[in-house]
Length: 114
Image 1 (cartoon, rainbow, N blue to C red):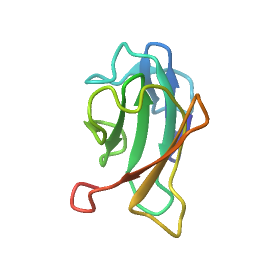
Image 2 (cartoon, rainbow, N blue to C red):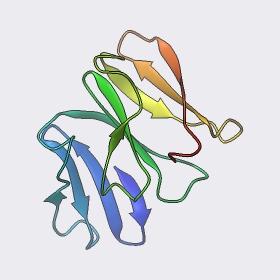
Image 3 (spheres, one colour):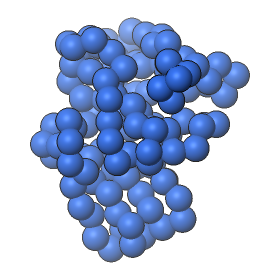
Image 4 (cartoon, helix red, strand yellow):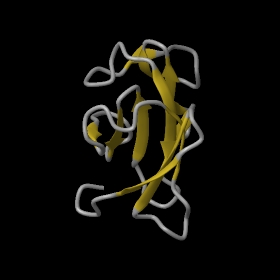
């Protein structure tokens, strides 16, 4: 689960992303490319407001609008299974993906996109 702003949350579930705008009282699906998919990880960029990352089997996606819309940041079917996503504050243009096989992948982020 990631905090969007005060009282607004976004969560990874086995049925896609869910969004709460009332401090967890209700959860609504986030429509789009991740809807209906198991989301294995979600991460909020530590220095870029409104930027989030999410992974599903076969891809990592980014959002620059607080999780409203998502675009792929990896090619199809790569990486296959991500467990964790991380941006280190000192390297804000690199997203690290840790796979279920303990492989760490460095994904260069397009500064113009995010």
